[in-house]
Every structure is written in structure tokens, then in C-alpha cells.
Length: 424
Ligand code: GDP
Ligand code: IMO
Ligand code: MG
Image (cartoon, rainbow, N blue to C red; front, side, top):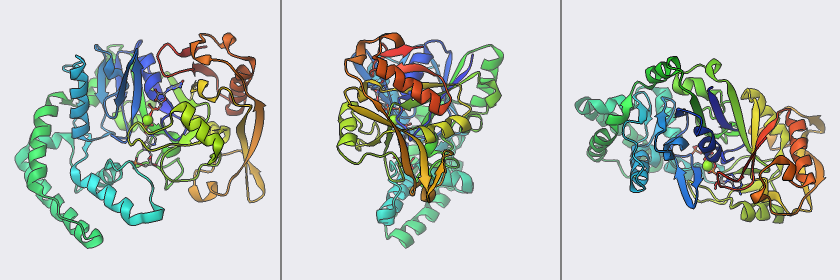
């Protein structure tokens, strides 16, 4: 049984928690896209782990973890995550495998991300400044890209880096009047990265195909959310990778056909970090209340997340493009004690009612939401163990989302802990 978990909103849906739970019945967890822009939280007992590049299965001591070719890998982030887990006596030796074809995020990518965002002023994307866009741009551009395999030949890398950094410095000086980057310092860092990370670096495509032949159970872990997908999200306010499940085959070399179940994760409401249209946003007391109750602050950047009602138009669309079989609905506990709750069931754009999501920021910015309003519920959901225990109005809310998205909700989150999960 192979499964793929992806976010169906703008990220931070609770993928880390869902992957952690499903990992119990899997052999290998694979990250296939994004980079250290991701922040996936796993809570085990009283301990909280925030993972950026290591798959969320890594907190389980025996779990095999793969970082696929589609990931842009910031060596400093991975090294620091490995160290953090080691301090808790969790070692990654002989069970973490990094693709030799994964592209490497270096200091100049982060600098470029920061300089570009600064220069964009009010038009900025609101990136995480983790160098994601510049690194993927170098991948697409080919000539100035560095892959993990390049760390194996430091002499050749020295020459390559000199060329790349000469080029980058010209751009930094001309466009941003910025200080040059020192190629020597980056090469020194690369020596350290090679030392620490080459022992984990292999041909992960070959590894995964062997695992499939051996009957292993694979769990693919998406990063970000489908509405941040470069091609299918709210462009240009997206990330630079295919964050929907469509990015999975490309990002690890395993065909989508091999996946038995695509699980889409959503929150019982919506959040977004960074700029871009957000039709159901509640930039008011309601949004503030959701933020405080749900502790909606970024796992990676600490930024307050923008909050709003559940958008069934958006999720119906992302579930369709993501070939989603089942939905995991997280944070149901967070929207307890609201007198009424709204769900967006259609948009009005230029006077016309539409139900198919327009993946285009300019069009979406004009969308007015048509809501269905339902009564809220009271009580402490965090200890409830079954669907039947939930207040009737909460059950009806779940059924309404199922009706509007056309997908069954099989997992319900009622708190951040593993045990605070209802399986249906
Ligand atoms: P990810 O990026 O999709 O893995 O999600 P994040 O980790 O960035 O953000 C989700 C946050 O919600 C984390 O702090 C989780 O611990 C927390 N969380 C996950 N599921 C639930 C839930 O059902 N209820 C509550 N209250 N918190 C949850
Ligand atoms: P996880 O995996 C939420 C957002 C940024 C910004 C846009 C582009 O934890 O769900 P980037 O740094 O990728 O160039 O920023 O994408 N973003 C996320 N938002 N969760 C994430 O990851 C995100 N990764 C990127 O806030 O709006
Ligand atoms: Mg997150």
C-alpha cells in the first residue's frame, strides 16, 4: 500500500501530523518537493518537532527516510535538523537517503531571495527567504545549478562555483548595489556539507524502485499546499515547485500510478502566509479569534497566518487536480464555540456565479464569496475519539464539506497530538 499526503490549501494544513500517524504502517517516507520553506510539526507526547527538510517520518527511530530529486536542499537546514534529532537520541545513520540529483540551496540563493523581495516593495510575494525561488530558477536555467552529486568532486565544484558566483555578483551589484559574495567562503562550506551529507547521498530513484520491487510500503509527503503550486496555484503568489500531488512523480521518479491512495489534508478553515488573494479571508475579529485559538503562527518564519473560512470552491479544485481519494480535516477543535460558521460554496466574479476555481491571482482577487452559514457547536472536542461523539452540528459541518468537495473525510483532527485524531 503506497500513499501520498498533500496539502489542499495554502500550506500548514497539518501534513506533518498526518504523515507521522500514517508512518506507523509504512516502511519509507519520501519528501519530493519544496525545501526548507516547509515547516512540518510532529507532536509526540509533550515533545514538539518542527521539520523543514527531513521527512516527518524521521522522528520514528526505525523509519527509512528519502529526500527526492525534486527537493531543493539547504544543507545547513538538514545538518541542523539531523543534529537536533541526535540530541534526542534519534539517529539518521543508515536510514536517511538524499537524492544525488537534488539541487543545493547555497547562501547566494537566500541573498537573492531577500534582495528581490526587498526590491519588490509592496509587490513582494512574501516568501520565506529560504532561497527557494532562486534555487529552482537555477535548476530550470541549468548552467548555474549545483546538485548534491557535485559535492563529490570539490575541485570541479570550485571552478563551477567561481563561475556561478562571478555571475551572481554582477547581478547583485548591478541590480541591488549589494556587497559581493565570497566564493572561497561558499566552497569552504561546501566541503563541510560534503563531509556531513555525502554519506547519505545516493541514487534515490533506484533505491525507491528496488523498495517497490521488495514490496515495501511507501508514504509520499508533500510540502506546501496545492494552492501554492507553481502551475496550478494562485500564480504569481505561489512557491516555485509543483506543491500539489502532481509534483510527486517528477520529484522522486516514482510514477503516480504506484500510489494507491492520495490523501488531501485541509484545515476546517483556511490560512495563508505571505501575499496573494484569499477570498474567504477574515481580516477582522473572526480571523483573529481563529489565529489565537489555532495558534496560527508560521512554523518556519513565525509570521502570523492570515485566517478565514473554509473555501470549498478551492478545495474541490485542488482535490480534483490532486486525484484525492480521501480528506483529512484538521483543527476541527479550533472552530469550536463559534455561534455560526461559514463555508464558501461559490464565487461571484463580474456578476457571474462560478464554482470552478480560477487559478489566477488577478481573477481570484475579484471573487466575492457566496457562503453557506451553519450553526456552530460547543464543548471540548480534544478528547473525543469517534465521529459519533462529536456534537451534532460538528458532524453536520463535516458532512457539508464532504458534500461540497465531493470527497470523503476519513481523518478528523481534534488537537495537535497523535491521540487527538478521529479515524472514520
Ligand atoms: P504542515 O506544514 O502542514 O505540516 O502544518 P504545520 O505544522 O505548519 O502547522 C499545523 C499546526 O497545527 C501545527 O502546530 C500542528 O501541531 C497543529 N495541528 C495539527 N493538527 C491539529 C488539530 O487537529 N488541532 C489543533 N489544534 N492543532 C493541530
Ligand atoms: P508547509 O510545507 C505555508 C508560502 C510563503 C509565500 C510563498 C512563496 O509548512 O505547508 P517561498 O519561500 O516558497 O518562495 O514562498 O509560499 N509558503 C508556505 N506557506 N506553508 C508552507 O510550507 C509554505 N512554503 C512556502 O509564505 O507566500
Ligand atoms: Mg507548515
